Amino acid sequence: MHDALKKYDDFRIVSRDLTDGPGFTLSALLHNEMHFLPPFLDHYRKLGVERFIFVDDRSTDGTAEFLDAQADVMVLKSNRKYGDRIDAEDAATLGLPHQRLELVWRMLLVEKYALDQWSLHLDADEFLDLPEGMSISQLADTLGEDNERAVMAAMIDMYPATLSDLAEMAGDPLIDLQKPWYFDGEEHLRLRKGKAPKTVYPGSRARLLAKHDLNRQKTRLEIRLRALLGLPPPRYNAIRKPVLLRGTPGMRFNSAHSVSVETSARILLPLRHYKFNGPIHQRISVATSTGIHPNGGSEYHDLSRLLEAISISDDDFRYAKSVLYTGFKDFQRTGIAVGFE
Image (cartoon, rainbow, N blue to C red):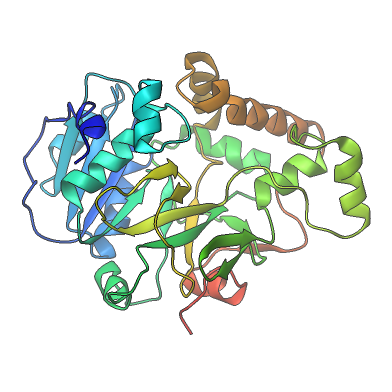
């Protein structure tokens, strides 16, 4: 491990030591995720994950107590915080594009617990889908020993039918994955050899922000011109994410959405992303007031404006190509999941 990386390794184990535990591993960074964690653990256990390694960044909602009772979970803590910055010299030495500590934490999780093995790296509001009956280990076994060291997923924002449906979820203590959830039924990413996947459709948030003239990255004229020409809405958020990684010494996270190793040009995974969730207004308030998220929580400011605009207009998240989610085959049929024919 590079000295510049070791400098920030103050992880301490606060639950049980599963450092040498067998089985397929999933790692994640957490802060107040009790709304998702019970369904999250249940989902990934069913996919064959046997060891969970979580960095808990000062949770106060019962996350730590809940995880302490899980026999297959190891919890790490640090004296630093997710939003801290590392020294500019260390960032340059490690080849990082910015100084956010989160990238170092992600690199440490690979270096310490997942070298020379396939593992999952996710957030608590992300649910990976595989073909019925396939485990994550079985998928990893198909990847072989070639140059591929990462498999990308298309992050698909799931949403309820209406803002009223979203409001009704506010009282749910846990996210209910059995409720009616929709997604934009279009091919989002296109795989390329030797390159990251190409974005061909930017996702539901980009669509909704463009519909309400709220994409701060583009002019209103460009948004409306693209609509008139029948083109996809302009991009907004990153919708690709390397979720399945074969740990390699020196593997670098350029962001949560980009790694320094070659990604598969054969397989694209579907990743359900529940950004529109019951406690969304609470999460917006925390993100915009604490500054723990990049760019002062600008993404959450945009979400706040979007929800307000939807409430004033039609109260509906859907459009002509919205699909009611029933399972993996929905993503395969719409071109979102690739490589499982």
